[in-house]
Image (cartoon, rainbow, N blue to C red; front, side, top):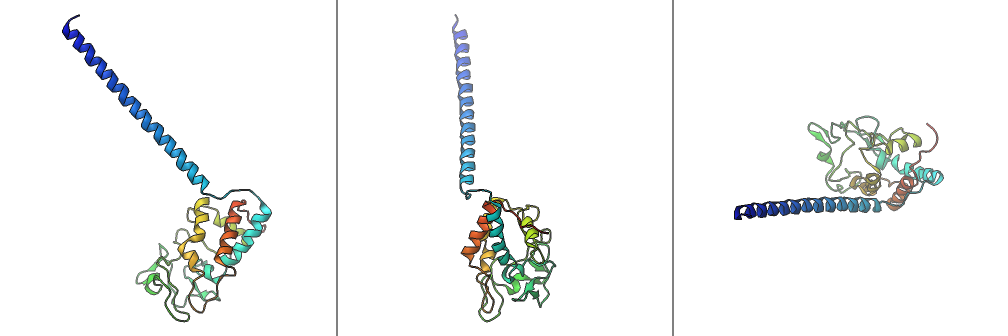
Length: 216
């Protein structure tokens, strides 16, 4: 065997080992990615409360939830029209602000003009929140006039609830605007139950099947 032939065989061997090494590296990266994805899925699933269907418990819990959702502190920002409601009697907002495409008002009359990041001091002054707004025009999420059955079905429909899945619905109980309902400013009534009680009923309703009460 000539020196040139030996050299060629050596180079072929080196190339073969290099290719095998690259393949093993790629396989290792793919395996890690798959395992990592499984871990994230398991972690995500484990973060959700246990689910066990129970229509009686679910409907009972939603009836509690419903009393909060149709209270002025929730319903005033979920009107059937494009003007928010106002006051404990849920009358049309006296300044007649419009919803707008993004739910934050139109032209110079934006929600944030009056509703500051925090409550304005004083009796019946504008309540505040950094993200004060109505639902957007393409998904109004109306509470006003909805029966318990209609509202329950709407809340779990991603096409009507802001594209929320079960995890996001559960998390929504602690949303900043939801919490604002229990900090409405001076002169306004609170929802009919505490936030802790509402959250418990909300999660119970969802995790026992999110059943809608019977009726229209």
